[in-house]
Image 1 (tube, rainbow, N blue to C red):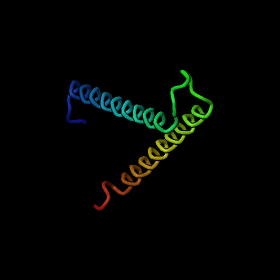
Image 2: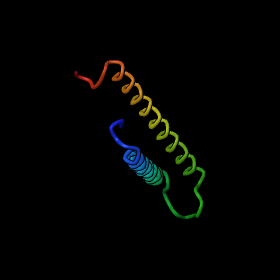
Image 3: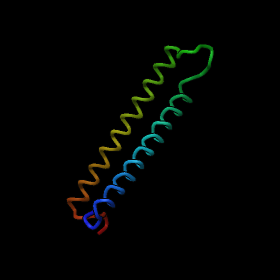
Image 4: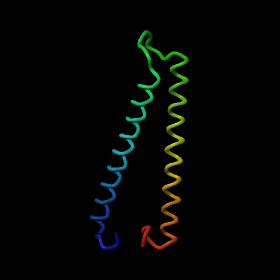
Length: 90
């Protein structure tokens, strides 16, 4: 990024932020859809049953923990790659 001028750096930063927001919204949308599909069984009431609510809470918790674990593993891999001086297989 050092070879970019200040305007180019700002543009790159803006694009990266937009891409991250888009990825987050996609992940959130997929989480909502999956938990809804797995947990909501009917529309007899405008509110969730206690069973559906419990299912949704477990579903969200499971996905959040999995996402955190995945993020941790990526950080570990990045740290290991940085210590070894680059990409695997070099």
